[in-house]
Image 1 (cartoon, each protein chain N blue to C red):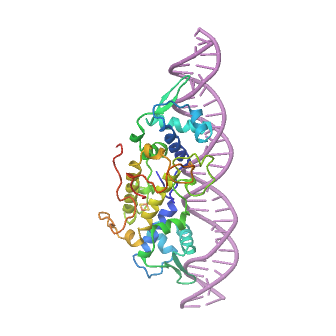
Image 2 (cartoon, each protein chain N blue to C red):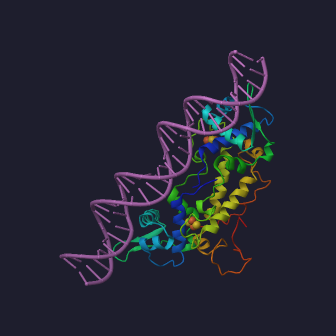
Image 3 (cartoon, chains in turn brown, orange, red, yellow):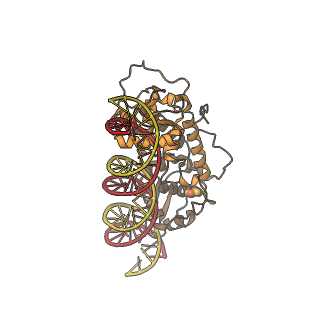
Length: 155
Length: 155
DNA sequence: TTTATATAGAATCAATTTAGTCCTATATGT
DNA sequence: ACATATAGGACTAAATTGATTCTATATAAA
Ligand code: FES
Ligand code: FES
């Protein structure tokens, strides 16, 4: 199945952690310790997130990072886009001219549709949703895609 | 974003192609030519699909492959599972003990939920759905404004 | 029976991607 | 000044992926 890069996974954990105190300034070292990744790795992730304007950075002593916006205005889709780029579920569903047969391809449009639905779902999931450990409750508020899976398929 | 392996992409194209004549026997070479991939690559994919019981194989002269079941009883999720294994969106959302902090991880359950929703969507999408041309840039003689009435999600 | 065809399966190789680290430059507070 | 901390890039190592090649086996037809 689709796999999210581990760096992106860490990125979401870091962002969710920071979302618990939105105004606070966290140093890279502190965050590395908090989520359990190596310091250089956390630093790399944070630099990327800052460059993509999801975080603000403060240099110098007592510097660090803080969320650029309130947790409910930062979506998971944005975090993924920042750390992985806008790749779709299939490579050829994004840009044209990658597949030799592209015209004869019957599944292309379907992948694009799935890609779109997934993207909508992740765009509606915010840091606010992610930071609460409510494993039992669904964030029902808005879940654009995947709401009515047909589920008539073969087991 | 989540990327599907190219082999899996080819696999779905091949399966969709075969779904147009469910009872027919296709040789690996024929399918390779039809979907535009190298013969050994197609062969590799077909062997895997046969081993996972999505295709039946016939050896010897005039041998080849044919769908093991009717197109509407083969889901895209099954094809993906056969070619990529049951990996989830994040590695740690599947098996336990991979992440050092796993307990403190606030996002794990959310990824699992997304994974589940995506899986449901793909389990409800069959080869029958995939084989009919969509609306992308294809030489298409269907009237505009159509859409698949019983399809879910993206719509 | 012999021959041509076609899959089964494993092993292999090259290329790409990813994870992780390191180094230098720069900015800021004490 | 000095210590702290990010910016940015280069770099290495590991894992994954894409594609190929080989031998063995099964079947249809000559
Ligand atoms: S366009 Fe690439 S496999 Fe369909
Ligand atoms: S359990 Fe692995 S990042 Fe959360």
